[in-house]
Amino acid sequence: MRYAELHCKSNFSFLEGASHADELVATAAQLGYQALAITDRNSLAGIVRAYKPALEHGLKLVIGAELVLQDAPPLVVWATDRQAYGRLARLITLGRRRAEKGDCLLYLADVAAHAPGLLAGVAISEQCGANTADSSIIPTAIQAYRDIFGDRLSLLAELNYGVRDQALVQRLLGWERKTQVPLVAAGDVHYHIPNRMMLHDVLTAIRHGTSVDQAFDYRFANSQRHLKSLADISSIYAGLNVAVERAAEIADRCSFTLDELKYEYPEELAPAGMTAMQHLTQLTWDGAAVRYPQGIPEKVRQLLQHELTLIAELRYEA
Image 1 (tube, rainbow, N blue to C red):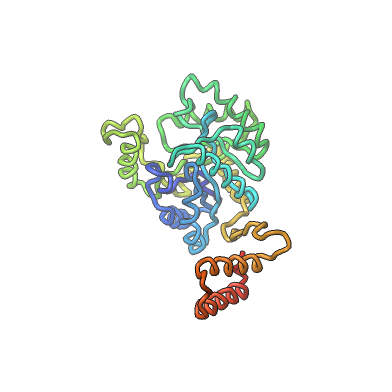
Image 2: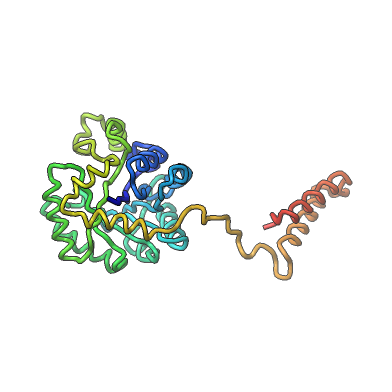
């Protein structure tokens, strides 16, 4: 069975993820996963820590993020190529700049403006009404996302041996029929192994400003938000095998890797008619003249000339 975990938070999702990125990667590789997506909350930070371990373990790393919106349910997105990654980075930067430090303010219109090249999965949780009578609003929210993403949108079926899993499955199947948005298996992973649940409980209590005992309503009901064995995945999604295969197919479509990134210098660095090196040379000697109004010492002149020559040879002027 092929499986890719598409919804996984590292400890870069502050006070949510309870495992380091390298722990998640190593465990996913050990379990035989085809791929792992690190999807931190409004952040791409965790993928940097996951990149090298993924190479070492021969595990495909899918680049993505969980976007928490002000006017729509949470959305998990995955970058298919370099251009899509750039749009995702700009989208998160936009939300960060709007908010106070540590927060992020994003809206549906922002997602629409940065959507090309991104695959997306609607993350339906109890917090947004997945198991309540208020769930009648969810198809409308799904349709709003479908208007943006079209057939690049999925509905995440996140089952974790919960007492209400079967009821949730029926609701998900109903929304799938109503909206024509296919189900995709995902784990809403917050840690790599079950015994990290205790740490996650502590983080949850801190996040809500209370004690672990008093955080009962906020804590997960069980320890199943970990990376599961393929046998467990097969058991949980019995009857939803297509949703499991779709997860692998989404990973197949995401070809972007961090090794495609390089520093891109601004295009306009020098005045018209001058090269960047000529402009740097002029600025250097002008600055030296200001620093030494009585004349540039010969030792300094030689040092500056040596540095400028080295910069030109290495093409570091830009």
